Amino acid sequence: MSRTKSALLGALVLLAGASGTAVAAVPADPAGIAAIPCTVDYKVQNQWDTGFTAAVTVTNNSAAKTSWAVKWAYAGNQKVTSGWNAKISQSGTAVTAANETYNGTLATGGSVSFGFNASYSGTNALPTSFTLDGVTCNVDDGSGGGGGGSDPSGRVDNPYTAAKVYVNPEWSAKAAAETGGSRISNQPTGVWLDRIAAINGASGSMGLRAHLDAALAQKGSGEEVVQLVVYDLPGRDCAALASNGELGPTEIDKYKTQFIDPIAAILADSKYASLRIVTTIEIDSLPNLVTNTGSRATATPQCDTMLANGNYVKGVGYALAKLGAIPNVYNYLDAGHHGWIGWDDNFAPSATLFKQAATSEGATVDDVAGFITNTANYSALKENNFTINDTVSGTSVRQSKWVDWNRYVDELSFAQGFRNQLVSVGFNSGIGMLIDTSRNGWGGTARPTGPGATTSVDTYVDGGRYDRRIHVGNWCNQAGAGLGERPQAAPATGIDAYVWMKPPGESDGSSSAIANDEGKGFDRMCDPTYTGNPRNNNNMSGALPNAPLSGHWFSAQFQQLMTNAYPPL
Image (cartoon, rainbow, N blue to C red; front, side, top):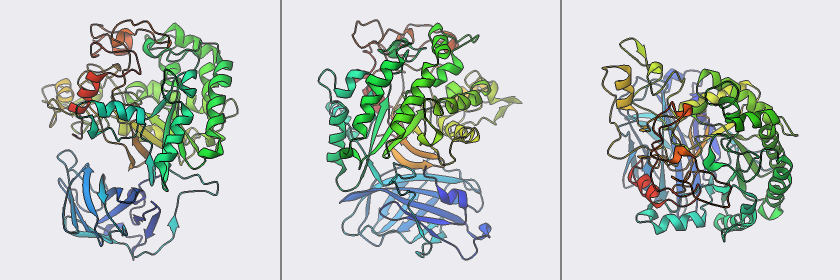
């Protein structure tokens, strides 16, 4: 998947044309990285008749900085309309992007990324010169060859590059109907195929073909990504009753013939060949076999059953093989989150298990475009006020109650680290990661502005952490959560995109038992009065009250997510 190549290659200056194709300009002294004070990777990720979205990554090869400002000028009439991860201003054709309070530190060899939307008319000419704090980073001389990141089959390295992403009209309408919801109702979200009836449309909702037809209508002449969640394994979510599915533990044949096969038949229709279809495969399935089985205190009989009968592995393998055979489908396999498999005894075994599933039932690693982390979860993208290497009075952050010996403190570091582990066990070196940022912003008035007190390692971590859950294992309708980074392509090294795979405002589960015909049980982790279990170290659940069934609209949660959004709306 697509990488931020300037950060990796140092001496190459990478600029992107309107199609997103990278053009390399080679400096006079390609070996002398010290002679290049900074490099810039400017990519146009998405372009339409009147506007575009761009992503910029700056790598600092000079002295470390505590603040920074990047400047460039446009040759045309481009006007920046909104931005993220930088304070962007414009005077005439001149643009300045300065650091936010949380990302001013830029180490020697370090990189920082930001993005923006802009309007234009006529030709969207590329900027030809960039400065970092007044020092020229690069001038694109147009030399070098283009690298499209594609192969003869039409597949691309990163499906999100230079593409719009499908806005689900059903979710968009619900969001727009909320007070203030129009601020985000045009954001792309995942379409959840979470039962057999969803394929053709259940309870008056759009079916898969209807969504694909709508995506074609949105597509126009450009590229379009459609994000699907494929989620109906036998014995689904063996450790969470709220999302138990319709298929029993032994119904693997029904999963294959009545769920995966019909989805594959629709996706293979030549009518949809021009769409880039991203499938996220079976959320919260395989990690359960690592963490919630055997002699562990977190084990459940249901997960032991699924480990023994092999139907999670078989089902995932079958889905990867069947869907991966379609040229314009990009499979991303669920990889939990840092607060689930970031510990030493979970990390490597999870990668090994994923490799087993990806090479079963006819699947190969070539059927895996990448992995997705934090789907429908709340783990902070980046904790800026402490690192895993910090100590307080000689005590490691890993010994704090919050971190609890984990190797990771946030999703970005985990996703990048786990990607390396996955490659080491045999996945292709080009795989990319997606991170679900739909509910991990943790903004609002309670967001810390700096590290906690150094009284103890716990006051240091708890006072500085953005993630304000009671425990990192809490997952249901969490109080205080906010929208995270807006969906964007190639935001960091090894990351194909930040996505909103979980549509904000859709409940994780009901706060009390509700009779239903959707196979959804009542999980006490969704009850705000619940005092916990071994999976959250017997802490309170931290769940919001009065929640509906999982997947149903939860207005109070949606309003909270907007209020606490970070970056703010």
